[in-house]
Image (cartoon, rainbow, N blue to C red; front, side, top):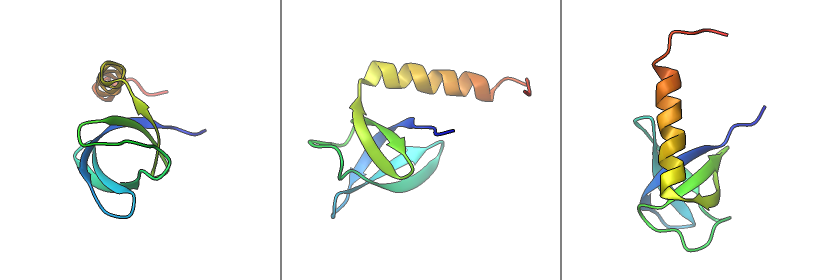
Length: 76
């Protein structure tokens, strides 16, 4: 199973790289596959690569769902 998650760009680095925050962990990712990325944009992240830009409202909805799941005590 593959999982892509929404992340917000916090810093643009050189060589088509950017820094994002994933649940409090800062990670450097490749933005080579997506044009016109700027700080504050949301992207879909999969295995270290930004795949596409994401509407900020949709990103926040998805992140809120992840937070809700994180706070449940249910186990599969």
